[in-house]
Image 1 (spheres, rainbow, N blue to C red):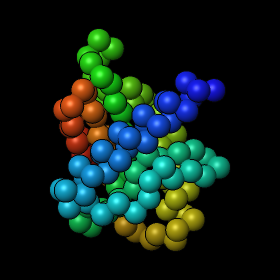
Image 2: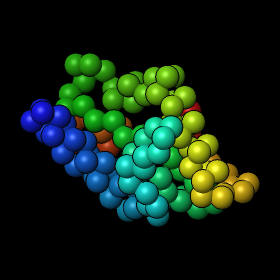
Image 3: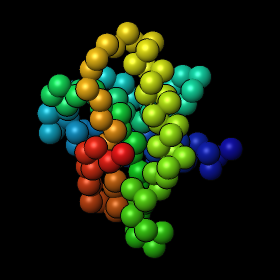
Amino acid sequence: MKEDQNKRRLGKHYETLAADYLQSRGVRILERNYHDRTGEIDLIGRDGDFLIFVEVKYRKDSRLGDPAEAVTAAKQHHIYRTAQYYLYSHRYGDIPCRFDVVSILGDRICWIQDAF
């Protein structure tokens, strides 16, 4: 139980770091840790005309590869389905959307726009 709490706390820390990074580059954060019956999205924001759905991945070092590599096809599918429900439930019409990844490796942050 304590390990789960530590993982959640660590995840929240890096999601906040990613949100701050995006905001410093002009993104307006609309949602953090959005959950619904279809899944979860770390961050949802507006970047100009785009509504962006952001997955945040962190690794302390590169022994297991780049954090962005952890956004597998299955994970992308879950994010896409959750984004569809978000758009429907918030009554967004024809708004351009983008799926981004914020990869944090140690203290290096990389924002991958239109990652999938």
